Image (tube, rainbow, N blue to C red; front, side, top):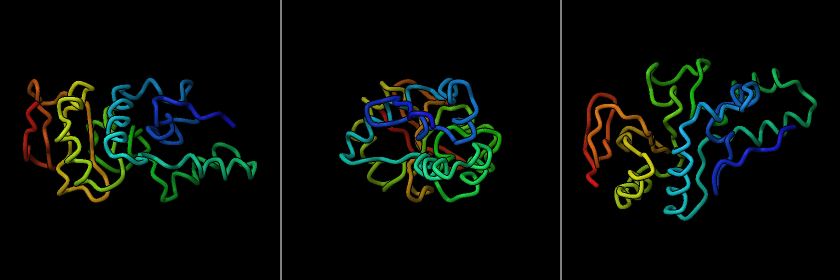
Length: 175
C-alpha cells in the first residue's frame, strides 16, 4: 500500500483527487491540481481553527486494501460509495457538475463544513486568500455543507473575489 502524499501542512493529495486518479496516474494526480489550492485549504483550516475535510475516501481504501482486494475492485467500490471523492479534481468518471467547471481543470475544492462560517472567514481575510490565488466562491445560499473555492480566472477583475451562483455574480469581495 502506498504511503499518503503530504502536500501541505494539513492535507494529503488524496484529499484533492478521486481514487481512480490517485491509484492509476504516475504522479497520483499531483500534476492535475493547481498547487495554490493546497495553501488556500491550509489558510481556511487555520482560520477555522479545526480540521477541514475535502475528500475522505482514503481511509475506506485502507480498509478495503486490508482485505487483499485488487486496486480495480477497490476503486469501483469507493466510486460506488458515499465517501467524498469529487470535492477536488473531477475526472471524466465524475457525473456531477458542469463539463467546463473549475473542478475538471484541477482548480477547485469544496471543503466540507458550515458554508456560512467558511464564507465569512474568506470575506474577513480576503486579501490573504486573494494573494494565494482564490478568485471565485460559490454563494453559500446554493451550497449545503460545503464552500466552493476556485482559482480559475474567468471574468475576474484584479483585487476581487467573485461570488457566483449557478447563473450570475451575486457579489464581489474587494481586496
